[in-house]
Image 1 (cartoon, rainbow, N blue to C red):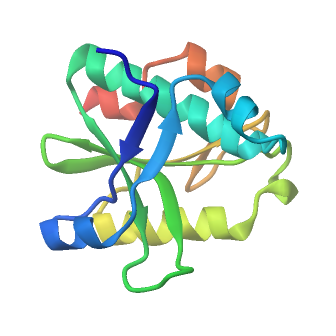
Image 2: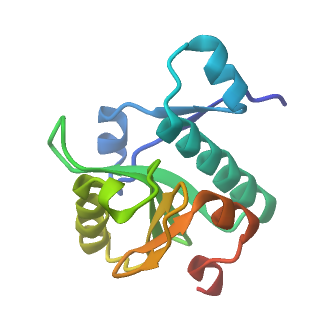
Length: 157
């Protein structure tokens, strides 16, 4: 089988809710994104890379599933890019942003993770950045480091 597009469903324990929200779509190669659109959105390209790597890791080991989270009932509500679900339990929440310093990271990225973490009972919160590193209540890790280090707290669950 050949896949070019990957749909990602919202995280919900309700089948009805899953059907009410649109799927996010990722492509197998960032080069295809560049063919479709002339505008280069580094954050979106980074998010696509992270999805493809999560997809590869999840299918190689069959250990976890991937979804996204959106604040219930709000069209412009908070969103988390990736919810990692392992054996029915949310084990990691990830947002992706093109940022090089803490000042570049929008508070909505942080607040979305904190709210989702509280709602989904998950304290393994991560923001993948361009090159900002920090460990607070949320772990900030550069994309390059995340890509070369597949070990994560979720692997220890």
